Length: 308
Ligand code: ADP
Ligand code: MG
Image (cartoon, rainbow, N blue to C red):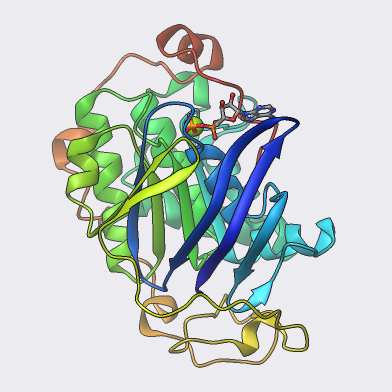
């Protein structure tokens, strides 16, 4: 699924946070977004993920302009095609790890036992089989983020958008989480990661730098003009690029050929993502996943009230 932003502007009253952003993210890309605090990265990611709307310009997913779609439709698109990972995890403290992950499948209408089964598999993929019954307060930050990643990918989205996913983690857990995202990308998922970590960004094939609401650097901007016309009559899945839009047999329309990575588990289920080192899986960290502890570690701006 191609993500396209054309001349996207975002204003809060007099404050202009994004200025005429043109950005195309193609299927299968692994993209880092970097820039100083307050430069507009989170706003940009939320607009890319349809959690927020621009005040000017257009956003298209798979060729379909979404800027003016009703909220219910956007919620459906998000549920089926986009996975979110946030710095502060946003796990439900009352639910076990497996039930937190299973919430990522609520939209499917799948019976609970099946959702939990899928969730358990997704937890295995992030090396968390040994913690399925733990609640967030009983898990370390790194473990919480692995649960959050499992929740993001359990529905096999086309795109994963991660906002500072390593921002609350120690360096070892952060490296493990970065490895998971890379592995996910290698399996065919488009991954966009906001990061403050220049070393992490430097390992990504594409890096976009934002300052003061503008893209000041993009080391791999696709060539060719950004499409400007609205494509109104085609259902989203009609704009398939190399068979990229499929979703558990429930594409928005049509029935594209499954790509190999989605007819199989994201990774083999008998092992975690390759990015997860054994040390990171087994290391005991202090439990730091409950919101109070996290706030104490890293106070950070509110997530704009959006929980996926
Ligand atoms: P970054 O993620 O790069 O730190 P943000 O996208 O969160 O930056 O914010 C960019 C700017 O927009 C900041 O100056 C921030 O204060 C402002 N901003 C973000 N959300 C809102 C909002 N809901 N209302 C007003 N200003 C906002
Ligand atoms: Mg931010």
